[in-house]
Structure formats: structure tokens, C-alpha cells
Image (cartoon, rainbow, N blue to C red; front, side, top):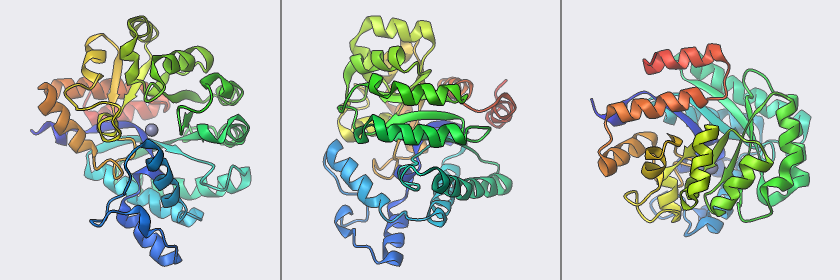
Amino acid sequence: MNVSQLAKVELHLHLEGAAPAAFIRQLAHEKNVDISGIFTPDGGYDFENFIEFLAVYEAATQVLQSPEDFQRLTTAVLAECMANDVVYVESFLSPEFCGGGDLSAWREYLHAIREAAAQAERQHGIIMRGIPTCIRHLGPERAKATARCAAETAGDWIVGFGMGGDEMQGRQGDFAYSFDMAHEAGLHLTSHAGEWGGAASVWQAIEDLRVVRIGHGVQAIEDPALVTELVAREIVLEVCPGSNVALGVAKTLATHPIRALREAGVKVTVSTDDPPFFSTTMRQEYQSLAEAYDWTADDFRDLNATAAAAAFCDEATRGRVLEKLELP
Ligand SMILES: [Zn+2]
């Protein structure tokens, strides 16, 4: 069996960032919104660097205007997940894009997203859970509204809280209030760090926000003491190799830190981040890793076992996920 077709767990997927370009074009057409400038001639998303990527991302999300749009988006994204043999996915959701951080609006958007997820699970068995994320470059005050949305809807479906956005703005600790609020509501914590902010940002995330997972975290490789700490604390990295290469965090997959981190004993997992933006899929990630490192089916089963153990879902759900992965 080709390793790219193994059953997979994906822990780091931004719902809007997973929107196929054709889906966003169609929605723009229906709503008469002109965002033609964000597409390449062959229909992909057009950007040169991380800051442009954020701008294109925000332009694309402009056409996602209602709970119904998000319901359709969720259905489209889960279809892509299933086409890549993903059996369990945790998706980052942004209350900022779903009602501007307003709690009652967020509840309506969340209801629509969950409807789509429930239907996909009933029909196809794929399991989805949500992790509301604040947007770092909007600042700590806006993050509090997002944390409140997350805390008020915490439960068996909203299982975590996180932070994305421009990692070079502010410090992780500036958002401690929001992370504490989410933690008190029983949510598990993750934050983007060590993608752009260096090893120092990973230290900040584990010391100041008490996260148990790190989004990316690959720059931890620069600091041996941090690598030791990540191993000791069993912090799990949500590594997105294709995203890192596309944005220039790593020059090539051959020089990407995931292998060295894994060999050092850090718990690493594999995800796609914003797959259509980076011209990748989960199958493509597995294929590329297998080719770059000679990883075998056993290596990928190990990565999936790590991901299943690090999933923020309840134990009954984890049991179902392990069954789907055919893992003990
Ligand atoms: Zn991300």
C-alpha cells in the first residue's frame, strides 16, 4: 500500500484557509464581490510571502459572510479531508470571521458549522472537532472576545483554544488572560509559535500560555535546551512541512527540521495548515515525507498514534479514532 493512502489524523487545519480556491471564486461570483486580484491565472491563490499571504487570506474570507456560507465551506473542506483519507480533523475556527467576535452571532455560525460536520460524520464517518483561535495581529483586547466565544461554547465539540496570525506582533504572554479564560472553561491550549518568532516564541508559549501543543514550533531546533524541554514536557508539535517550504520557513523538505526534532524525541505530527494556499494535501505531505526521508508505513502509523493521543477530543471519541486508524 502506498503510504499516502493511510488513514490519517490532522490537528492543524484553518477552516477558512482550507477553502478550495474554486469554492471562494464561486462564492465571490454569487455575491458579486470582485476579488479576482487574489487568484493566479491558473486559479490558485496568488501571494509571494507571508504578509501577502495574510492579506490574500483575509480577502478570500470576505466572501464568507453568513452561517450558511460556513456550512457550505465546512462541507467542502471535509470532502477534501475525506479525499485524503483523513478520519479525524481538528479545525481552527475564527470567531472574528464568524460574526466579528459577537457571542450570539458566533453561536449561529457554530451551529451551522456543526450541522455540516454532523452530516459528514453520519454519511461518511469522518470526525471533526473545533478549536476557536484568536488572531494575534488584532491584539489582546480582540482576543478576549474570541476567548469568551470559545469558553461559552466549550464542550464535546469545541475542545480547544488557540492563536494564529502574525507571529511577529506582540508577545505570547500578552494573550495570557484569554488563554487562562479558555483553560478555566476546560479547553485544551495550542498556539502558533516557532514558525517565524524563533525558539524564543516557543519558550514564551509553553511558559506564559501553558499550551500543551504548538502550532509549527519547528524553529525549536535552534535551541537544544528547548528541544530537551519539549521532550520532557511531552509538548506536541503540529508540524506543517508543505506550508513551511511554501512560505520559506524551511528551504526544502530535505532541510526541514521535522526529522531532527522527531529523532530527538519530540512528539511531532503532520498537518497541512492552509492546503489550497500552499498547493498541498495530506496525501501530498505523506508522499513528500516518504520520498525525502524514506519513512515507511510504520513511521506514519507512529505519527498518527502521536496525533491521536494529542487530539483534544474526549476519550470515547479518541477510541473511535484509534479504531479507524486500526491502532491499539
Ligand atoms: Zn496555522
